[in-house]
Length: 116
Length: 114
Image 1 (cartoon, chains in turn brown, red):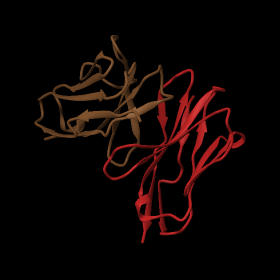
Image 2: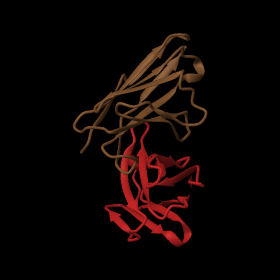
Image 3: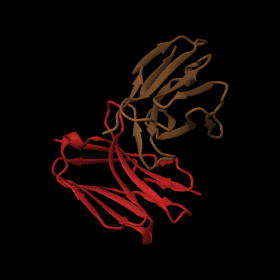
């Protein structure tokens, strides 16, 4: 089956620094990638949708300048949390789709971000 | 508006009991897809099933079965003879063909005790 990796799996950073999370589709070309955020004991909330080579589409309430998304190739998307604050601590999950949309989304294992 | 409701926040059962997780959805699209995912404590999402809106046949996979009822907009998930390894959070999700993105319910935490 399709495999999606995320790196790092866990990261601890200091308040005010920036953190980059990578999402890779290992055995298929991902036309679309999605970034989700999950607070403890909560559901997954879609942050943004990115198509290769174009700007990401952010969901309402998600700051595009704080959560920078780059989808420069068909196998890699990155999420950069800029000037991180403790309230950004969360579980970030990416998914990748070979087609347009969510019919076949393959999820990465997630990245747990802790901002101290 | 698209919405997924999982009314059961937490369920606790004893091993070997059967358990049903409820999922009710709202959509205006006639073409849509319904999903169930399992999220164990490690955090990764495990895909369980996808159903399209034109296929109302119930599905059975080992101890798992799904009941899709368009008349009540429900897509319930039953685990037969539950096991401790079934303990996890289970998410129901909806994807409309016109939108593409996945909308998740709030999840049901299932605890299976030995």
